[in-house]
Amino acid sequence: MATILIVENEHAIAQRMAVNLHLVGHNCDQAETAQQAAELDRRKVYDLVILDLDAPGSGGFEGVHAWENGHPALVLASQSRLSSCPEALRALCLAKPFEVMELVGAVQHTLGAGAASGQEFHFHDIEVDMAGRQVLRGGHTVSLTPQEYSLLETLVLNRNLALSRTKLLEIAWGYGYQGATRTVDVHIQRLRRKLGLEKEIQTVYKIGYRLNTREEVGAV
Image (cartoon, rainbow, N blue to C red; front, side, top):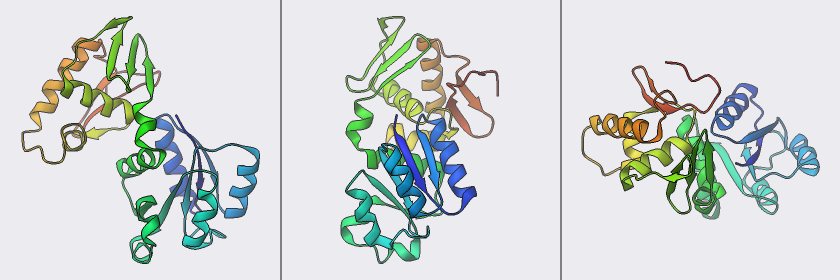
């Protein structure tokens, strides 16, 4: 996945972002000021910079262009500040406060749709080729319906995060889907059976499901 530099002067927020992005496979470094970020950037190559406009030395919206010259940038700003955001930067902005899923989705979007579609995911004897939308188990092709594949890809891209049934419907089925959340349960059972991931695709009590790719995969 990506190597990300988080420029955020509120340590608790930066730490929370880093932890959740790490859960879905990204590596993160943190800086509290733009100066610290520049020093890290000289020593390491980053795929993405997450820049809070309130971080000391960020330079506001004008300062974003300097980061864009070297790598993609995702801008964090309060809703009030976003009202003055230049049109050219609107697609790069995420309003604070935000949910974990919003952050993960914004990171994926900023890195580019091609980044997700070109990924390969390996876990136990499972291989997921996102470019070819093909799934292998023990080297053999697993026959998944388009909807089963979409659900699996959603779980993979957001692995280790608890996703509600409603959120899974929004992402894997589309925002216009009008069916019952029960359909998520049915498709989860099919994925567990076809992929042999009965323990790894976990039920999260009163929330929904998550694909646990960490070492401990006991019942939740």
